[in-house]
Length: 148
Image (cartoon, rainbow, N blue to C red; front, side, top):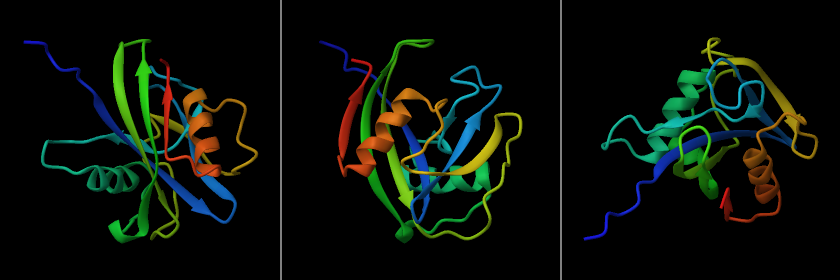
């Protein structure tokens, strides 16, 4: 019997305000440090849904409360990450246009900057697959692949 591939689900929270998106700069994580991405994380258990996970991550990482009814799935990416771990991931990007609280860095040991950027003027040190996702979101493309 052939073993099925293992794929890691990863969730990302995209806060959108007008033509701006909130991005965080990775720090001291061992992966893409110094580059911008979105608040993100993994499911904590088999009993946590992707929506529950992204809402929890938003609270843990940037101290905002997002209601499930205020998020929508904006993009799905099947990503092959060779370095450093040779993993396959399904990245789910959720957009929230409404939330409670003012975003702030809650994990200074993993993030050293949090800023609003115009969606068409993201920083040059944005993680390449995140850059691709932003382009897909702008162009209303629901699915993409990266690293294959």
